[in-house]
Amino acid sequence: MRKKTLAVAALLAAAALTLSACGSGDKGDSPVAVVSEDTSHKAATVLDTPFEKPDLVLTDTHGKKYDLRAETKGRPTLIYFGYTHCPDICPLTMSNIAVAKKALPKAEQAELRVVFVTTDPKRDTPSELGTWLKGIDTQFIGLTGDFATIQAGARSMGISIEPTTKDKNGKTVSVHGTQVVAFSPKTDGGYVLYDQDATVDDYTKDLPKLIKGENP
Amino acid sequence: MNRLTVPGCALAGALLLAGCGSGSDGSSAAELSVSSSYMPQPVTAEMAAGFLTIANKGGTKDELTSVTSDAAGSVTVHETVGQSMKEVKALPVPAHGQLVFQSGGNHLMFENLRRQLKQGQTVTLKLHFAKSRPLTVEMPVKSATYNPATGH
Image 1: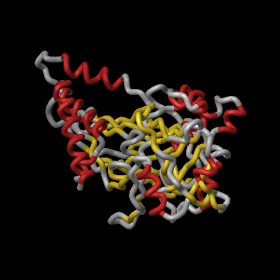
Image 2: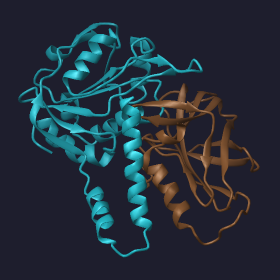
Image 3: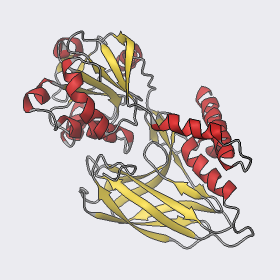
Image 4: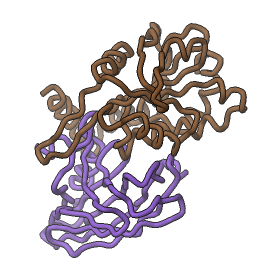
């Protein structure tokens, strides 16, 4: 219900903007201001209060236990919640990071931990997840496990995900997270957010900073 | 209900054109053309997304009702609703407007690809409409991170 309301609000906002853009009157100043705000969109949001790294113990793509806090302690870490049966945003997000990562010196690439946590653990078994991630970057880490655990972990980082459901036609519908969260190697806090509009160029520009725990 | 959840940007574009394109009124037939089509190189042969824009220069609205391609077991039309996607039966192509498929919004979903598609290859697909004749599209496979705004 809430989603629907939001969608309607967005629609109204879009309609309003459009109308003002088309308006033949000449109070043309305000739409222009709105547009210029849009173009100054910055990919990274640095948080005043970083997120604690979620205490997630899940299963990696080799079927082994993976303790997120222990394994990524003191490492620059990017965490994203998504699923492999996702044609658009999930592979784009992970591919953007993969391409940006290749611009780093080899030693820094080895430092970086990129963790993809599935939101669809039923379909994303360790081997499914492994096959998919191998197609993007062999160093990326894929985690699967109990959905409730994953959901709680995501929530602790301000990311809301829902369980996979079936729609009216029996088609499976999964949900991905909206942000990539970067954790500092210095504090292990999640201090930078990237939304799904972040591009290869954004990550390429920011990764050298994130590796050092600096603000992008 | 479907219309309500069409992403703002696509809808705004459509409204904008519909609202502003006051050049030729009347009820000329739908006149469809396709541009900006691409498929980001898919990760596996299991699925891929496709994006394009269908413009309608005519004065009558039409509807995209299905998409077929020899390259995939099935092609379905999806809207993005919040953080998930929803299969839809048809999407409108407004008179003097356009139907936009773009990353984060509407997309075509190709499942069970016949072969692993790589950047530089082309996928042939056919768009079927309620009124207009089908359109054949040669969709180029771009890099996995292709961004139409920057062209790379």
